[in-house]
Length: 46
Image (cartoon, rainbow, N blue to C red; front, side, top):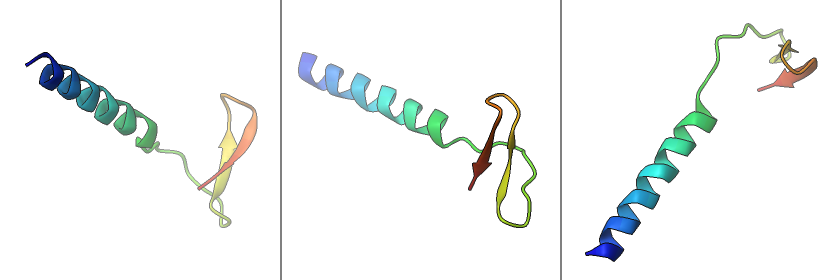
């Protein structure tokens, strides 16, 4: 039972982490698919 619980906790945590990483943002992009990342001061491409 403890192994199943541990597996489910890891699966839920991993799924939540993957969603956070893959979450899109509402920034507009230029014709090349890039835009300025104001938080980091860099150019970010998709």
